[in-house]
Image (cartoon, rainbow, N blue to C red):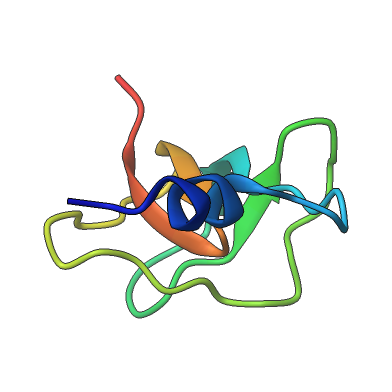
Length: 75
């Protein structure tokens, strides 16, 4: 069983970092790690983001990013 303090500390966010973000895969994406256009922005990210093995990126997919990892397509 998970300890109460561990559980709380795992979800504390003292830096106010964005844990969950939404984005769209670059329309020019063809293969490899995708670059993203985050909600509220109009330019493609400079960074290519890792993704879970269960997800196959495709151009223009709307995705959820958790702590810098693409976890899947939003349908």
